[in-house]
Image (cartoon, rainbow, N blue to C red; front, side, top):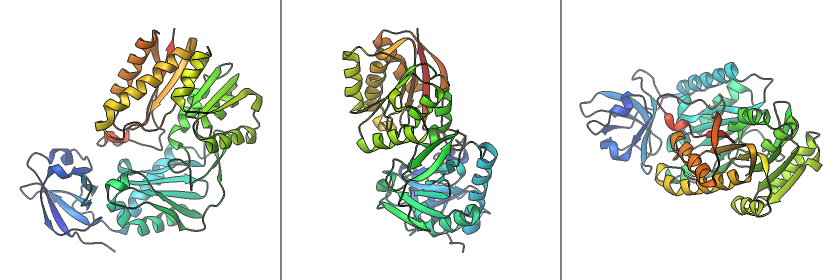
Amino acid sequence: MERAPTGRVIVKPGREKSLLRRHPWVFSGAIARVEGNPGAGETVEVCSTDGAFLGWGAFSPLSQIRVRIWSFDRETPIDPGFFRRRLSAALALRRDLVPAQETNALRLVHGESDGLPAVVVDRYGDTLVLQLGSCGAEAWRGCLTEQLVALTGAARVYERSDGEARVREGLAPRVGPLWGDEPLEPISIREHDLAYRVDVRRGHKTGFYLDQRVNRARIARHAPGRRVLNGFCYTGAFTVAALAAGAETVLSIDSSASALEAAQAHVVMNGLDPARCEWWDEDMFQALRRLREEGRRFDLIVLDPPKFAPTAAQASQAARGYKDLNWLAFRLLAPGGLLATFSCSGGVDEALFQKIVAGAALDAGVEACIVERYTAGPDHPVALSFPEGAYLKGLLCRIG
């Protein structure tokens, strides 16, 4: 059933420019006035000061992102049919771009870049994990769940709406089954002929770092015969990929004992040699300093840290952390060694990240060049009108 708009949002003069370029966010500071009394998540009409239609969006009274645009087409009703069409298009894109033989675990819906702001859907085998990060997404939870089951035939849909974005929306976290039974045991998945077990109930993000799938395979090609260090290893996907490709040894470091336990299990279940592995349960910064003191050297280092800067406001502080981390890593590389370094911080763009890594190399006294660049896989598309979707960036640097 279509839900009629409950109000109008009038943007300030000049602030309609981003909407005309199809950027889907309207910030509170861009709003001249709100007409009517729209509630959280309700559909509003967004207009310029001269009354021109700009879009249909979901209203969020507490968030700095006051409106998230569903559609820029005046003739498009925001109803269950709208969500079915958007979900169908997202699923078709993945069928075209991600071969079924490559994996049975991938992102099916990537928020704004699939025309569904703040809606994330990840697939793990026959289980879907749904994340809703805004009032608008929250309002259509039931519809989204029903449509996903109808379109995919999934056995279950589990909700992991526990991200920090919900706090800014004034929403409480929600975790639990939406359709089917609760997955009490980790779910088995496959990726590039390797096997993993994913805890969708308690794992990071929705249980696994799906955005690194392509990068794991690319980096593994450099692993044969090398001494590898996998920092912030979580459940060891980079470790397993490197070992399977022929790494001589892999030291994996994480500050979570349970993650390291899962990583060790992944090594065994893939038939790899545990004797080639070393595991440290330690803070990464402290571990890198200890390795330097011990005179250890590595031929390939992978750094995939958690988010240091969710927004640009935290970029300056995050830059110091990234620089220290990469400086320490450069000092541990053997001649000709490779550093695969990542940032998933939305507040640090690709240019700034490269500048930070360049500064770390300079301070470490090494000559380094970029030999590869990394982004999220094709199941994490980035709309040209929404550059914020390009949150994951990575560099493979080789020292002389």
